[in-house]
Image (cartoon, rainbow, N blue to C red):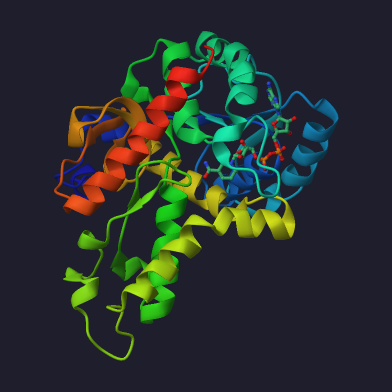
Length: 331
Ligand code: NAD
């Protein structure tokens, strides 16, 4: 009888099995991004066991000591500095290792440096945790997701990039500020590359179902200059932050936590993660962000939706830039 009370009709055996299993995750890279992910995952009780890995052992130990001293303040979980072997049979491996942008540098210029790191790293991850979902955060994230898929031999659904989850959050935050509504009531997406060619989907941006450009009040957004200014702020946010403090980390840490929760809690959540696209909007054999359904299997579905001719043209351009970069890399 009690079981009936606590089991909703929508719960499946898979949901129950997932809910009862300890959730093990590995974070590779104890830099600014890796540790922001670790902190956010810890305080949101997202993993039961977290292993953090870095080639810089000294730094890794210092970071993890600092983090575990907070364990008495949060839900119990096991957190340690370790190796990929310590993280064996993880459910999820989050990769933040690698070079980052210097002030003024764009993301695509990091590509070959990070590919050299991934050539060793990705096969080792798969050897230690063959059933894990790989969540790639290192930049240029769309290229690194494609490269990881190739190097891993895993199904494309299991290799996900954080993509434009961060850009979409920035877009929603800035629009919500402008329109004086809670960002959770405002839905708007950035698609394509996580980088200079990313695309704002103005035609689908809405507040509670009302198209943003149809909402006419004191905060009217219809002036083109205004909407372009907001998008420029989204696109240039990383450059602005890196110029001032050398790295971006907090918002991506929170965004990664949402992706990890969507996966481990089997949420079927729609997120603009980067995944392999074949056939949608005429795009083939490239990883980029489109709204996708994320659950325990990874990306199970990328949503097919209509774009205006301008948006479609911008998305094609973005995919071409990524495809050209893939063709130039030495795998
Ligand atoms: P960071 O320099 O602070 O940290 C990188 C860490 O990776 C270092 O601690 C380094 O020792 C470690 N590392 C290097 N090679 C390694 C290996 N083979 N195995 C294990 N660890 C290794 O850099 P950061 O600011 O944390 O940024 C990390 C990456 O995340 C960069 O590529 C950055 O551009 C990217 N990033 C992505 C997003 C996004 O939205 N996808 C946002 C911000 C930053």
